[in-house]
Image (cartoon, rainbow, N blue to C red; front, side, top):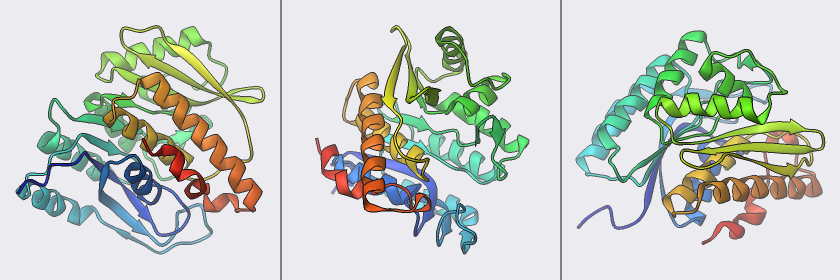
Length: 276
């Protein structure tokens, strides 16, 4: 009996019991899109680090054994996606995972979580940033924000880059491996933009009206939908439009419900919209 009779995605990320981010949002979203989500946790948090305190356990020492058991089961994945990685060692383990499980039928999605607003996150060292840069060479799809795109290409952060300059960044990233790239979180007055690049096609800028306040986990929701759409054969530009619209509508619903910003977005209220 095969374990591979259903579409599957391996999700390598941390698990936060509260706060709606990482695996906690990616699992139900992929499930709604009729894809079995197979999580490989990098760490387990009581709640994400945006709260004043949290309890957490580093899972790094267990990841190799976890992977070995999956290999024994001969699991095969339609997608492999990685998110926040807390150390250089974890980055190397993701590379090992890709070497073990990625085939020509597998799409690798890397969300290079490193920083925002022109700065590295306090949890990301320069060594880790270099490791993530190397990891992106193994990706088919990249979902950086503007800060991360600049870090990956060694550019000075500039929030006012032109579409031509954004295209040059994507061409450089594509030259290293990924053929589909979306640079997210671009600010245009009252709009948020996503710059979409796909090798062989003209790049485009998609805009969505900016709503509500920034919330935790929106990037994880975004990348999960991009991953699910890739597995389900949805056009890349259309997948970015769907992800952006879903996040915006979830933010509006969260504000209507009075959900604190630390608690992420109430995507559960709209989860049915993602069912194929």
